[in-house]
Amino acid sequence: MSERSGAVSEFLDEIEPTIFGFGAGITLLFVVLFALRPQAAGEVVSGANQFVLARFNWAFLIVMLVLVGFLAFLIVGPWGKITLGEGSPEFSYISYFTMIYSAGLAAGIVFWGPTEALLHYSTVPPLYDVAAESQAAIPIAVQYSLFHWSITQWSCFTVMGLGIGYFAHEHGAPLRVSAVLTPFVGADNVDNLLGKLVDILAVFATLGGVATSLGLIGSQFLTGIEFNWGYQIGDVGTVGIITGMTLLFTISLVLGVDKGIRRLSNFNMGLFAVLMTATLILGPTVRVLELSTQATGGLVGDWFQMSMFTDFTNGGSWSNAWTVFYWAWPLAWSPFAGLFIARISRGRSVREVAFTGVVATSLATIPWFAIVGGTAVLFQHGGVVDILGPVGQYGEAVSGYLLFQALDVAWIPLPVGTILLFAFLVLVTTFFVTSADSSTLAVSMMTTGGKAEPSSISRIFWGALQGVVASILMVIGGVEALQSAAIITGGPFAIVCLIAVAGLAKSFSRQSENVLLREETVLFGDTGGSESSEPEGRPAGADADD
Image (cartoon, rainbow, N blue to C red; front, side, top):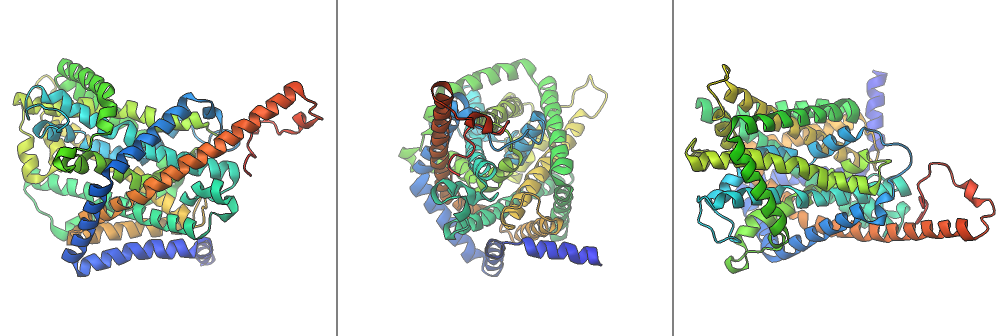
């Protein structure tokens, strides 16, 4: 009994009441309003979402381009050698990479891998004057899917992770999103009104994003059951699926970063590689490799043009629905993904974090979309299997079922297609679990004043809340509304990311100047013994801006 009361006391003592209360309260208020007046609430959210996308689409494109440019400079420039805190990294590089990948876009990457290129094949992006469903449309379709899911989407996660991680590990700011305000208000003052507002908005965006993903993955299972076996399991089955997934990611979360998230992330990447390799071998291998080469070349050659395309002549309808949406969505997710990256990046260099965040992740993503998406388009174009027809009837979730079932081959005496199909579902689920437990950990950290290891009760509370929100919205049909509401927060976090860039540039510049001054003093001046007073292993200029 005393242990139980002690755990409850720890939970109550660690809560930051303002962020905890408003973060949870706003989310629950949204759910209640939507449950009571679903049509009115849906119209308000949809209207606000359309207003943001229509009026500020150009801003999203420019902001994301700035973030990519800043990270490119960090990778090749002199600031890259600056480290995020003292000591050795907590995890091996492989585990570090797999955790970043799993916590970020991985569930969406797996889900959309068999589908997005097909949709661009059937409706070619207006940047290119090519007939739909033609031979010429195939490489463009794959090229655009590579563009949407590689470097640019990951840039906001990485910038936010660097901003939070540097000021938390190097300057003692709390491990919260508001840490990016440190160079402007000081590490001791990030708990001001603006800082609390940033953290409250981050909690809402994270809860909305994860609850929406729960609904997305749940719908994939429901679609598969209906498509393959003709069963519609109803509201009880829907709640059961959401509850099962919530239980999975909560268990992983309670086990902690090392025993839970790290191990599951390593498993994810192994299965990811196996499924991708099997698709390449069992599909039209040579044609897929040729298509991959052409699409990747097109990505490199047209990247800047695609990055700035607003579809102006058509009122921005296509770019708003695709590129701008894809930039707003990760911006809304950037608080939790960035906070998780910051949590696991202590001791790593700025260059290492930036490279892993945008280059290493893209090197894993591009082959997936080129192979899986390319195979789906080639199968559709060659008449091997009709995927677009069922997608139009059942939705995007059905494409993976059709693609992997079509990979059955006569020379293997096993139901290879069925095995790959189940592997695909396992991969979507486990990638979602790692995204959900890392985001729930981030919410727990934000609502406990930046505590790196929140109590188990705190983690369970937020995990359960996300499951409840997702279940309610799945039953009443409000998942898309919550998704739209969460995307609207991408606008404010675009500004937060720019603040992080400005703060990092200011601090890195000052730290570099201090290092240069110190080196000049050692070379040309009398150090007076100060050289020996620098703690061994302390990163150069670590106390700049302190």
